[in-house]
Length: 171
Image 1 (cartoon, rainbow, N blue to C red):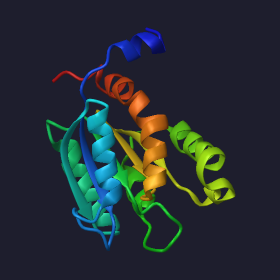
Image 2: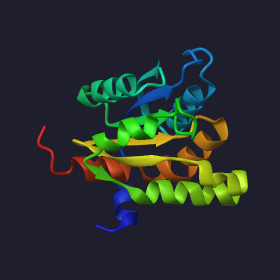
Image 3: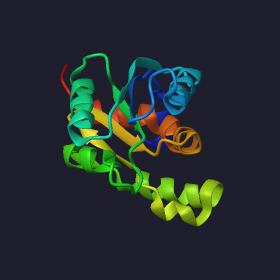
Image 4: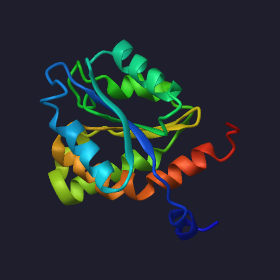
């Protein structure tokens, strides 16, 4: 099936949004709210949204819990991807992925360089892959990064990725 045919087979994707932050709450989490709104605008569904602390155990627990939920098709994480010592989202998520999508981080950095932050893109860390039958995306927590990742990469390919991740799954 061609990419165009895959995109015609769109469906509503149910997403869990996880924000990694020691300072934000659900009410002050602008990036999580932005992710939610962009998904809704694209006719997808929000299975839940939460905020977890910047530590590996909290991030992994949230991801595992989300991937075990029957109504979650994809997990979207924002925050904790920088270079500071407390930024451990990538370190938490990467070992959990059974299949990585290296092109996601590569293209995200290229687009960040071209459209948003210029050479500061070398500091940007983003990752995507599959755990079980669930796609997981982790992007920086700035509103600009979330908007870029969602509009340019995640939303255009979300249904296709979920379909590919689940096509051999017998429910």
